Image 1 (tube, helix red, strand yellow):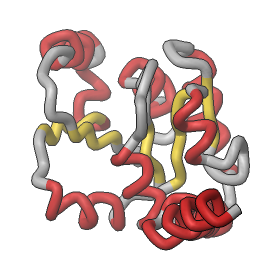
Image 2 (cartoon, helix red, strand yellow):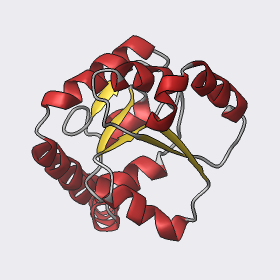
Image 3 (cartoon, helix red, strand yellow):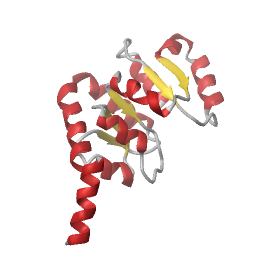
Image 4 (spheres, one colour):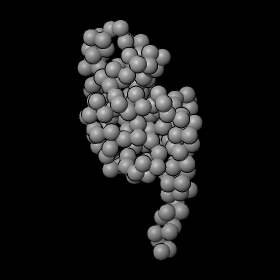
Length: 159
C-alpha cells in the first residue's frame, strides 16, 4: 500500500495517506521505506492506534479507505468506513467481495499487486467522489448495517 501510494503521490502531490494500525509488525519496514523516499515523507502519516470511539472522526474526514489485507474473516474497519461514506479500495478477497457487493461499490485489486493498486489510485483522480461515496453508504445500509443483517437472518429463518 505504501509503495503504491508513494508512486501515486507523484501525480497527486496534495494526497495524504494516514496509516492507522494496531500491530507494529511492519512498522520498521515502512519507516525504512519512507526514509528511502525522503521527498515524499510528509505524504504518509503514521498515526498508530486510535481508540474505537474516535474512528468515526477519521472516517468522516477521509474520502477513501485503503486495505492491503491478504485475508480477513470480516473487515470491521471497511464496514465502519463505508457507513461514513468512505470509498473502499480493497483487496479482491472473498470477504471484501461480499462487503462491496461484488462491485456495487468500491474498487478491488489483487492482494500484493502494487501496480494494480497504483492504477486504482490513479483512477481516483477522475472519480465522482460524491457518487461513489453514496454507493458505499447505500451498500452499507442495504447489506451491512445491523438492520440489514437482522432482516437477512429473519428471511433465512422464516424462509
